[in-house]
Length: 147
Image 1 (cartoon, rainbow, N blue to C red):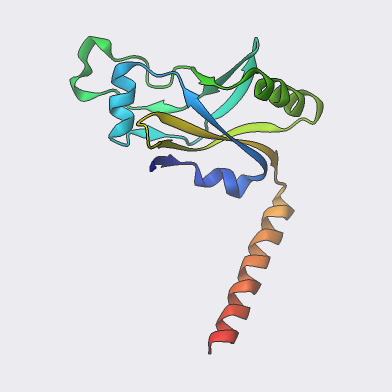
Image 2: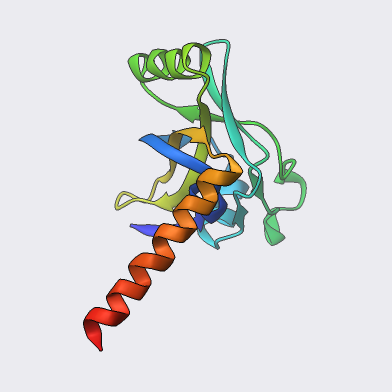
């Protein structure tokens, strides 16, 4: 498994409730660009639209040798999930008000591009401070145990 891109900001801004592995519908030049690691997940999010999960604002840079076959770098891309998973995601987003956030894009053993999608709850500012304070205290305890 080769990780191409990660959304590190997502773990900082959200509490991750559940994760899903899903395929991405890409064109030929997009997958070539993805294999070179030219993906940016910053500010990307997913929504359920008309029974399909779509990822928005995921930037895949145009492939250099792609010429006329290149497509819009930030176009909407369909995510490939089972129907029962999509129904579950609809329940999370509409009833519980959670958000769908892409965490990472990677190439699996079979050579297919996969996206790790998280069902997430937004953190408030005080939540972020609590998490940072806990990390700091854990680090201090670790140092005291070593030395």
